[in-house]
Image (cartoon, rainbow, N blue to C red):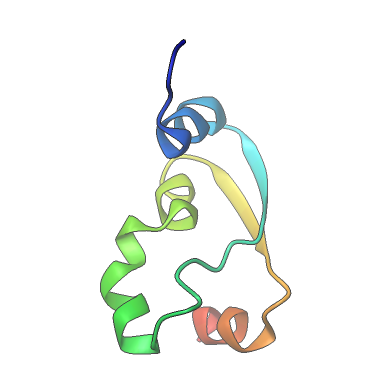
Length: 68
């Protein structure tokens, strides 16, 4: 049996592609200050560095915070 790091597999696959990231808000169970500290660890941030990304999430509050 082979095991994969899910985030690494996704990052390898999406490099230089256009990506629609559904559920892009990471760490939504944490307070805003803690989410900011972990931002660079989020999958959305990582793929946004290597791909053309649009993120969609049902959480209006978190997505509007990221836009400002």
